[in-house]
Length: 110
Length: 113
Image (cartoon, rainbow over all chains, first blue to last red; front, side, top):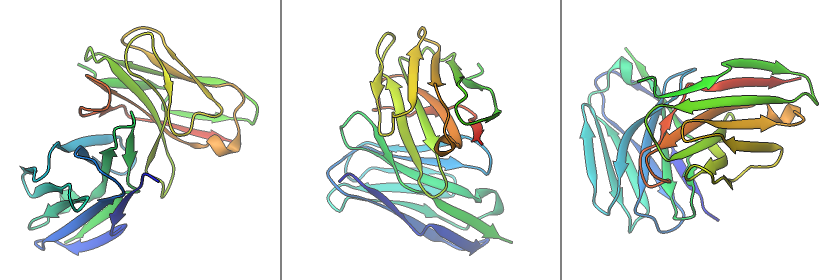
């Protein structure tokens, strides 16, 4: 079965702290996407990771992909309030669709 | 550029009623998609259109039909709405099928009573 699992599902963290969101997937893929969704809003593309070892950074967010471990991480550095959102990873298993994780709801507390 | 637009934003239906959700993109993308989002389940693909003139089933196509009217427009039809179809529906587009970033519309919130 093709599965994408994220953890944690909920994360509450203080401003200024660092944390990592994990995205595990069930079978071989070298194409993984990260999206952000604000409450009541649509999804916004954050990162596209297209090979083993790929690393992308934008501001306080950094995403990486380890295809051998079937793992992607989204690292948050020195969190600020406006990073509060739900973050989704999605994997292309080569079956003509993206499989989404259930999302990680991140709340940054002042 | 408006990007991906969807209408309506909100809709309430009674069981058995029909409706069509409209989606349009102005980015000259080849591929378009319809997803539904339910609490705790991420997004699930209903149908997609890899290019103008083609449509294919996704993960949860039952109860839905689609039409790729032209390169810009991709509509989703519920022929006989059921309470299980209460959800938020997102349309998305991408330059090519699946292997590129997808751009999402604002969503349609549908309640079926």
